[in-house]
Image (tube, rainbow, N blue to C red):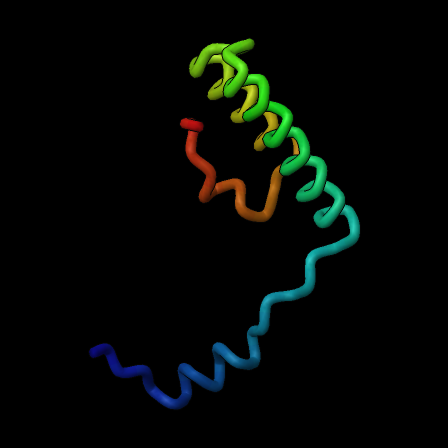
Length: 75
């Protein structure tokens, strides 16, 4: 188990992440709606996996979602 110094804990607590802005929340919503529609196209076999990956990558670039770095290129 890794121990954390008490001073480190205090510093972590003081550096609370800021709340997302209204624009960031809108981008997050638009990204998830776009991805949901994209997934439906893929599930109905109207687009290939390669097309899905390319469009998903463009969605992450355009909307810059908060969880974008965690998203992968595969459905």
